[in-house]
Length: 319
Image 1 (cartoon, rainbow, N blue to C red):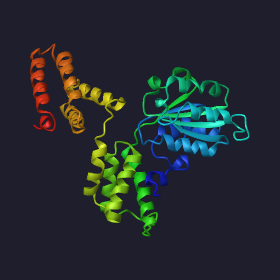
Image 2 (cartoon, one colour):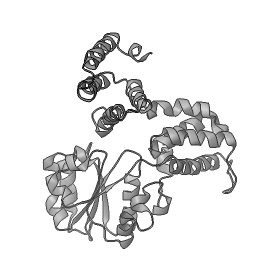
Image 3 (cartoon, rainbow, N blue to C red):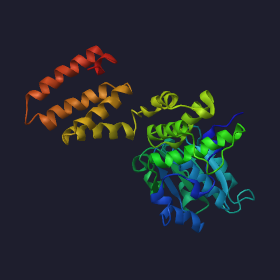
């Protein structure tokens, strides 16, 4: 079975991790904690593809505790009870390091079942979540954890990971490139495009690279990268933080008299297939931000929004 490229090249050392310099750079708090070997209970919070699982794996390699991994999307109380049953046995002489991915999907009862063992130190918890932990993690669990925020990875850092991945793909094909050999210009442009279009998600970028390389080989072109990454770049989690961040950015762009930014955020929502949310926000803006100075704005915007709803997508987004 072929492993995804993102898993094959997953960093094994902190210096190989791209991005997150604010917590993993020299002097960063998380780096110091990991290097000390005294691992506290932690929650890693941030978007997908920013290194949360990678860093948890690195911590697991450096600790003498028995590692147990659970994904909260498919784990339950029975899985927790199985781990608890191993405590104080020969299987877990130093306690358990529990990596709980997507912790926000555990309900209150499931999270509460860990409290006693987190408190007495027999379980060291590392939870990861893409949601705001201050809303999605049970307060009693959160109060016993240190929260570290993982941020979207800068395009320059994403490109560094892509370059490494590209060289590995060439090596697997028997076309190994010397470490100091510059990449062909077309390949360099392709990697730059993927890095900038990946929205700070390294895993997404490497997936697009793997798709391009598989379709076109070593001399892949930027035009193919546009097709492989464009659909990903428009992804919007309609029920999550990114959705509301986008709505807020749209409204604040209009409030700040920045038409280019407002059109960008509006276009992103429409291209993602969301018509209702920007319509609602435009009606709010017309009433709250503009209506006091220009009362007719609400009437005009309401008429335009009604037309858009009647037309639907894609016609409603055409000029």
